[in-house]
Length: 553
Image (cartoon, one colour):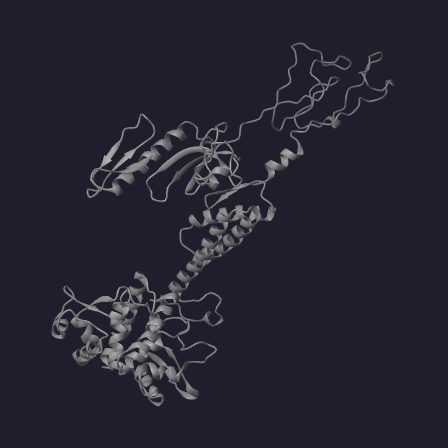
């Protein structure tokens, strides 16, 4: 099934065509989404018909092998004229499976019966069903009608022939009748031989001697039983080979596949459990790669490690608890606005503000911080008069004039136009030092920039800070304390015992002895529970109401 452009490129029409001659071509002028939906429905219809016909055939040839394994072999190696295969080509093997292989662009789908090894080696290939192995039935013994099975009259059934497969397998003897199902030959007592009856060939010449005991027939060879006893499984669209060694690795991969499928059936997510599964998968796939030499397994292990870290960060962001942190056991459970990586970006913007503000006064630094967050990605951003008024109150026009005169900010119009702009028609400001052609002071993605900018807006615009009419210096201190917290809301790292008073004073443009005055103002605004500035450290703790704004160190 193929999805191709159709008509003029600007129209966006697509065409869906199937390699089966009986399937008619479909055209969709509405766009790619409608065409892809129809293509997937068509593929599902073919799969339904295959399942109705019994699913994949155990005796089918591998379709990938028929194509010279070109689906998972580089084009430069596939289809050599001399008929040889490259040394690193995956050899066909394993049961026949029904698989759907798609390209990464979502424009080509293949339905194929292929071997399990080729399916595991083909990128973006999903195994749907596995063909059942062909049934093996033992031949039933044939006894001519009326054949005499009495002692001394050998029957036509050869010694050692077996009954039908199942629990009733028993040996047939020429001197005895069929043993009952489940009875062993050694436990059956033959009747006494009448006088003058001839003994079977190879028996003792003494009339009192019992018939020789014949061992029961084995169902299969021990090697075949061992091979069938080995479990196989599937994980991450890959078939775990039944002969993978060491056995503990094979069992771990099978158990992991079962655990991931069981997790998908859970009614509620458990991110801690999911992170643990990803960590186990990373270790198992790394060992599997070392054993098999398959580099793609190393890539899968790296993706599992990244998934484990991301899942733990999601858990920490949702619950407010940091896994493995000894001080986080009794802390309050909060949903934080910033993840730990986003908090790192927020602190980077604070450092940029302190280092690149054209004027040291607090009002200018606050404006530089807020505008830099708006223009962090492309050097341009939108602001409104309401934004400027909420940040700078009555000093907005003076601060804008200072930034423009210093060359840090460019406005398309006048300052009065910027102050009069509304949300429906904001002013597009430009920060020349943040333009793409300049060296970037920080790398913020779209989502991270939005989240950090929203965090700063919530801190500066906190309702209790506005109600107390606290100035730019105190709000800068609120930003700094919120960006440097532990999970329990305390300021600074545990080994530091607080925030260095000199660093806090430098950011807020204050003498160190005046930091305590503004910290007390934050206590009155219910931002900090307590403060202490002795021994050159600012100690304190955020109140419970502002814990969601805490940026974890």
